[in-house]
Length: 192
Image (tube, rainbow, N blue to C red):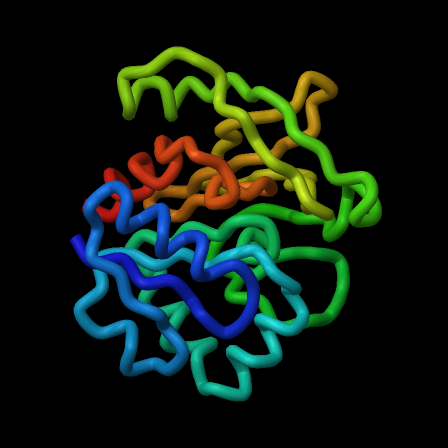
């Protein structure tokens, strides 16, 4: 299993570390040719506008869309924004997932927080039942899902923080900033 991590901007190194912990072969993706031979791709957190502009500059938008039509892609935080088809403003998006996302929905950096989440699909896939401890840093909210997209997890107040559409995965939080490898294991199962 070889998983690429989009390495234009953001916390790609942390995802690579997590993937190596669970035995996956990894590759940093900066150019279209780096997508060759990959089973899946993670788009990390960072700054979604910057990721989009760099993806345009490096000729990655169409190759990433094509890749996502037949391979697993997981967007965390800014990556979830980049995967979505609607954010209510003009910036480069892949438009692969039928989700509407609101950027920086939790407020500024000082409003970052951690919380435990109950995620049934994650429990089923990994055989564990303890809550997933999620780290939110200026995270987006998935305002709505449509078409084939489904809600994986919401906060107690109903705000959606994880969604899936086939082999596409979006999370508002940062699993790469924890010691819990279950989300990365779940993504590997989608890429298989």
